[in-house]
Image (cartoon, protein in one colour):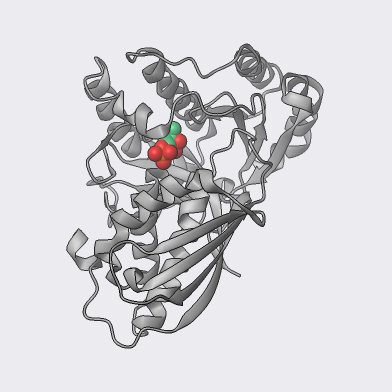
Length: 360
Ligand code: PMV
């Protein structure tokens, strides 16, 4: 498919108004995306677990507004209060998607959104938020083009979400999602995320992710600036090659349920992401002392208790502790006793692999 396939034909009668509600999940990448080309095209493919608990619920209300021209007008509310700090991001999102949903210019929107995870928890809401909004917009498109097949609906939702925030392309589908073309993964595309199409061992269907909130502060570096730092980065090409080859290395690991190899690959991905930030110019150190202590404790516990637990990180100080469902009792006891003292007010979120976005 090409971008062109997402440009709709002439619209028929536009509905006067509508209201559409979606819940979209957050996701955590196993093979990370860091570095992009123009048009939110990733420098390497990535694969993520879809989460179950961390999500954004968005109600999109629309009404027809006068003569269509340019990007639509909109108001945005977070938990019922005006949220002007989201305006800029949503404005540029509308500008990017307008060629693919030209009917938007005839509408005024109200966007009401809330997250299941705490405010300023350091957990990015852009992936789940952009996916929930894109799905609402696809509901409107579906009213205008009623014959749209479900597979196209989901692909285009992921395509639009990607234009808002790259990793949002992976927040539509469930379980494991790949975004970014790789010759070994049938149907994979730089334009949208797809449900991981290769065999996956049952252990990964119920994996746990306990998210430790180490630092709830604002991001030090925006994603856009961070991706930009990969341009001209001395290790960029080696990193893109490494991530690309790991997409292939992950396949037998996922198929066989090889937890030892999973741990090695996933932890190295997290540390490599941070290594890229630490070696860019300017550099960023996003881990806190408590992050490092947690990583050390996870490794010690894994060796002493012989439990297949590992960590991964986003572009921040919080730690995602990943482990199989059947290790939950022992690992959660360890988390409570040893790791929660490193979290701000002991805060953490018990999450797990989830089944993808839902219409509400
Ligand atoms: O979607 P963005 O532009 O916010 O990029 C996020 C990238 C990471 O979260 C750091 C890694 C990933 O693949 O999710």
